[in-house]
Length: 158
Image (cartoon, rainbow, N blue to C red; front, side, top):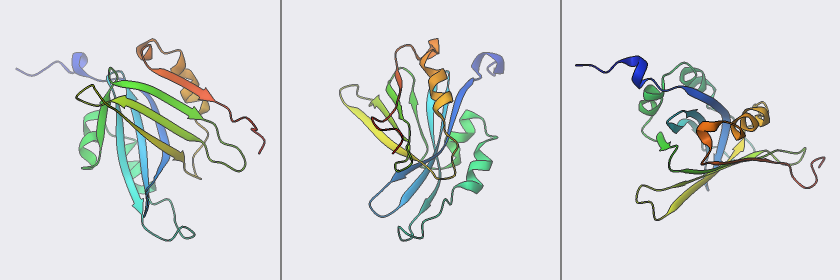
C-alpha cells in the first residue's frame, strides 16, 4: 500500500538562495529550502581557486535544484542534509552593508539532543537581498519554536 501524496507532501515555506560557506581552502555554495517539516541544506558547488579568482560555480546546480522536490534535493548530493523543524533553534539574518556581506546564522540541536551545531553562511555577490523572505518567517506559526530574527548592523551605511 502506498502513502497518499496529499498527506505526505511537504510544503515549501521559503527558499534562501546564493549562500556561501567559507572553508580554509575553499568556498562552498549552498541553497537552503525550508519546508513545513525540515530545513534542507543543498550543496551546489565548491571553488578551490585563489581568493582573487574565486567565482560562483553553483549557478548550474542552483538551476537544477530550483525545480526539485524536497526528497530529490536531499538525494542531489552526498553532502546534502536536513534539520527537522523540532531541532532548529535559530535562524538569524544579519543584513549586509556596502563593506560587508549579509550573513545567515543557523543553529540546531544535534541528533543526541545534548549538543548544538551551527553554521554561518555569507551571501554570494550575485544574490538578491533576502530580508523580506526571512522577515516573513518571523511571523510564521510553523516556526513558533524557532528564534527567527533579522538584524541590521550598527552602522548600516558602511
